[in-house]
Amino acid sequence: MAEICPAREGTLLMRLLAAWRRRRDDAVRRRTVEHLVARGDARLLEDTGMERTEAEALIERRRLHRVAELTGLRGRGS
Image (cartoon, rainbow, N blue to C red; front, top):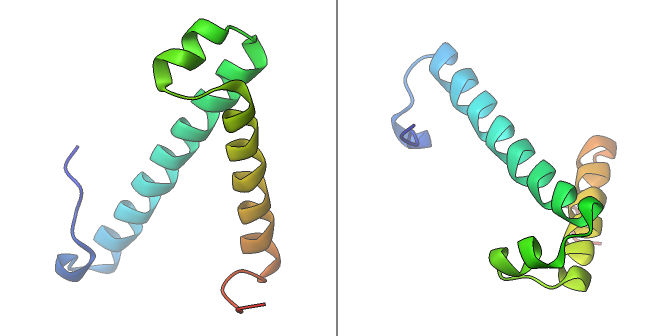
């Protein structure tokens, strides 16, 4: 799927579709890393270029960003 440039998105339907695709792709990436950490297979994590501690830190950072987005605290500069 080709990414649609936000500046060229025409209708409201196209913008909603693009946002849905971005969120779906983000969810797939998030689940993939979480799944590899949960399985505990170090070889598969090494194939992604991450160590276990890096992957766990990434998962925690993503979780905190999701919480901040839900509570409206992200982007306030504090």
